[in-house]
Image 1 (cartoon, rainbow, N blue to C red):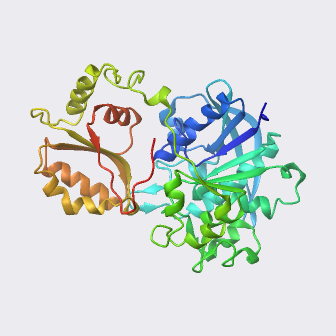
Image 2: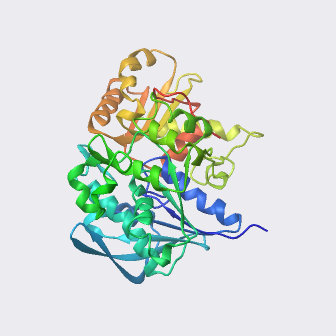
Image 3: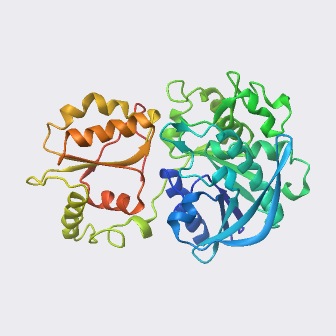
Length: 393
């Protein structure tokens, strides 16, 4: 029988507590899958304002406080706990100055200016939480740039700490376009020696690159598919980190993102108007009509509905929409979008909605229930991007 592992999943967002994109879906579903395999799984993320405002779950204080070094000072935080199912604990770093804000990473005007401090703190706070709760993971699974410096800490400031001697790190790149790049003046926040700020370390064209730290210092690296793992090792799609990834090639694996069928299968989805399956598609029409009503679309014959659910950002390729939207709207289709991001794309799609009433339905923001309704009611999805398609389940 395989060894039962103690696994801590560290992520900046996790369904159902906080979400801006697919990362939250993965880190919300993965704990259940690992738990079913017999492993002991815990999850940790910041306590955002959305956790309290939208989730409705009861958070309970663990009565434990942590004291985290950030620059030349110590900042305290309290640890709260909730549950995903009965066997999976979710821990929250409660530091209101950093995380109790309307959005996770920024506003329409741009990223929060202190994001470096917020997530450098989060990474180190994760390690201090392990010690405060006497929680000794065999594996800490880090996700995206927001936790990229955690493996660096384990190999430097915490390398002689007996508490972490047997801890391994897995680092997953969900989107290499977002790397956590900050100016070098933020190095003091890390409390790391300057010998880490080199081309062989976290230095990246004169700046700090937190994702680069995760790639170089973690024990294993994974990406969202085998195809993507190969793409990001090329100059065209590596966003400057292709050489680093090629250097660590033998530790890099592509693992296709799975789907939580308990949550997303239309035959058992409780958030859609009517269930359906491959054997009985009658409920699909009901879900489509529901989507037409929500977006106030003008129904016409059996016009297909094209859907997008996404963060609206340059890296996603949304500028391409502005070039083809007028031609696209000449087609016998209806178009629905759910997402939020940079101000220019929020304005772009709001304008599209005004120019094509009845044909284009736009919702700026994120709504989990509406996301399920779009998945169930749309006939097809528009994939935007300049890179080649990744493998998907």
